[in-house]
Amino acid sequence: MPSTPEEMRRTSLTFYKVAKFPGVIGATDCTHVRIQSPGTDQAENYRNRKGWFSIHVQTVVDAEARITNIVARWPRSTHDATIFNNSRLYRRLETGEFGNNLLVADGGYRKAEYIVTPHLNPQTGEEQLYNYSHISTRNVVERSYGILKRRWPVLSMGMRVRIHTAQSIIVACAVLHNIAMNERDYVPDDEIDGINDGMGSLHESVTDRDRLTREYFHGLLMAGR
Image 1 (cartoon, rainbow, N blue to C red):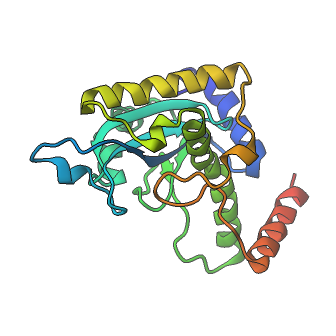
Image 2: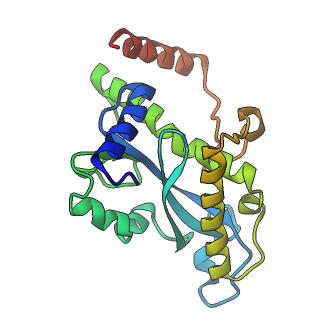
């Protein structure tokens, strides 16, 4: 996470350029990393809704898909909000370490002074515009999972190692991912198309109506620049 006022300013400016959502210093979400059955009494806690075993990993990324915070120690059965509320990042946000800056997250997280989620049932044009800007800004965290798993297939194909070793591998992959991103060693979009993290496709198909709606709100954003 950005640690100085200048770093936070630069990070929020980069996010603002995406869809004009102000004050954002990170996009957060969770993904599933496939593992073999732990083979203990707690094994079923690691079985996800698709039937395979996984570690539930939370990350925060910047606007360029670099991972700035990671928690890789919870079984699949753990809710996103539980992972977040028990993280060191949560305590840092609670104490105001990042000032008035924000994280963007999906509806699995609880709204707070420092974390914003989309409207579940937007009624007005303003609420729809907010959701468009929010979703466009947050999309980078979902894209980062596709990049990460394409770069390190072991994260999607599965690991046949002990839980604590798998956790270390996940964190190591995140560190190496950041090094690759800093070196501009990117994974082409066409190579990550269709990769998913167990919760949905990286590039969701949209209907013509959805596409026109996005183009409409994009036009509003551009007009306000």
